Length: 211
Ligand code: 3PG
Image (cartoon, rainbow, N blue to C red; front, side, top):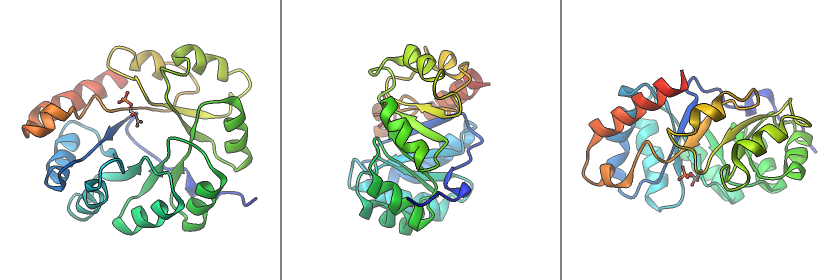
């Protein structure tokens, strides 16, 4: 097993990571600007829609101040594809040794997903200190986060899944929570009607709650 380079852990200034499904590549750049305007300089563009890859490419090329990453990375090939598209980091909803190894080989900063103590042990064995807890609310929410802080106080979590303005502050108050992720900042209806001002307002609200 190879130890990850310390640079495998991405560094974010934002404590909120928007999780985004982009269905039309032309939404990518205005959305990135709207988030920056609202104080968020990181975005996880998921590979759940075929437009995701082109969206990452467009943001990387046209919005250099945005730290764009790829989400829903599930296959080793995805690592190389998103890196070529310009993603600066990748996240996965889960954990496989092959995926972790591919990210390490590519030297692409990576956040693996975990939901159990066993997966946390495996992530730690690979040298990771930051993992995505997914799906956070469904796997026990705040109670799970608190319980994991006993044996895994040296692991930092990014709870994602069911996080909202109503519960994000409670998560962020926990010592083992580095940041939270969620899709509420870029609602599909606002994106569809091109209401970028609304997305900026939601980003501002999230930043204020995270302060
Ligand atoms: C993810 O992929 O990380 C989640 O689907 C985001 O969960 P949410 O839609 O409940 O915020």
